[in-house]
Length: 157
Image (cartoon, rainbow, N blue to C red):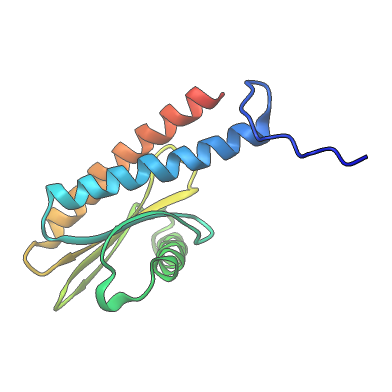
């Protein structure tokens, strides 16, 4: 006798479905937050939220010459991991963010606070803004994303 598969539903005690719901909600709310970042700061052309193992969670904007969003997510997490190893080796301390400044603009990657190092945000801005402004926007956005993640986990617990 073939039983039809049961639909995935959320029950407070069920950990796997709650993780799935949390991941879906983080993608949705994360994408909304990233779109807001781009709306607030016209120089920011692209933003992506990635896991520490390089998987894309959410994105907003156009990657332009940079390639695909999944590839950028993977490079962002790798760059931040390398920066963290470098700062531990050079100064014996943790890395708070990584910045790349080019003639075409600035890329800033920051860890999302309170995510136990599991999420990173990267933003790419054109050359109309200075690195300090782009960094400030990325740090502010990382706090917003941390609040979103905390709210999601609290509602799915």
